[in-house]
Image (cartoon, rainbow, N blue to C red; front, side, top):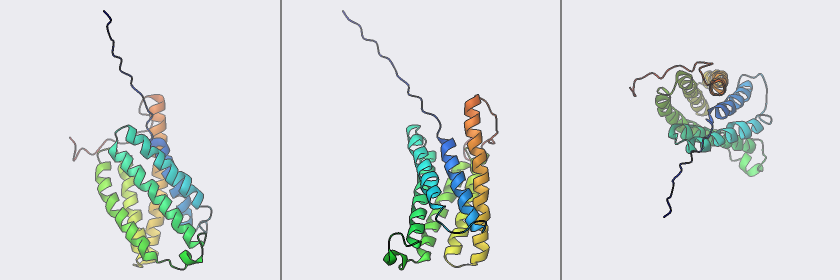
Length: 205
């Protein structure tokens, strides 16, 4: 008589937050330099938008899905796709896809996309409140970024809101770099090396 033994295999996957936040940090750092007129043009922003803003965050999205992390998957996925869309828009503006597309541009269409992302980011900010304070700060700054981008695209006090977007974007870069460092070093050392701040405890007790 034979007996069967069942074994459970657990596959451990690393937390992708570090690489996702790094991608967000680098693309916003480079893009904000153009908004702040420290640099000019779009050509050298586009590769970072595609490979860091898009691919790094989409990789984090897929890994968070494996962790059953709906919030992280949705956030990294949505913003990764955002940077693909923005990079494509810049390519159109530069005439890479031909004069027909370049000549048919209406910037207010981007305004509607930014508005949609503003609404999305507002409810994601509520979720970030119950993750940690660094993530909440990043989302609050993204709220300001999309507010500035939306009103600028619709021609409402464009100088003021373009400037708001620029400073919000460089703020995102700085806080995301810190969040990346905390995610990596806290996991690497197995303790709180860089604090992320406790959740607010308003919606989840």
